[in-house]
Amino acid sequence: MQFEEHIKLIKLFDIYGNLLSKKQKQVLDAFLNSDIGESEIAELLGESRQSVHDAISKAKKQLFKFEENCKFLKKEQEFKVKLEKVKELLQNNETNKSLELIREIIKSD
Image (cartoon, rainbow, N blue to C red; front, side, top):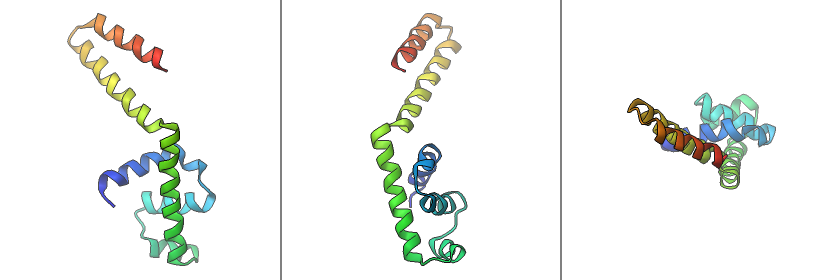
């Protein structure tokens, strides 16, 4: 798994993790946050590596599906970009432009 995808999955897990089944949540948490391989997780849980692999795959698909439908991560990232722009405008003493952007942010929520 590429680093960027791993980071995105961690963020998606933080947002949507509680919507996963107990097993999916447990397995994916160990896989993403503890950096434990599928074989080690299977050994710890007393399950087959294949069942752990399937749980991880299904959980990943679920997280991406939740994001596709809800777009919370995308909205959060867009919000951060706008806040950085407000910060930049304020640092450049462009108060009126920063106020306009703040009003735009408030209206969009």
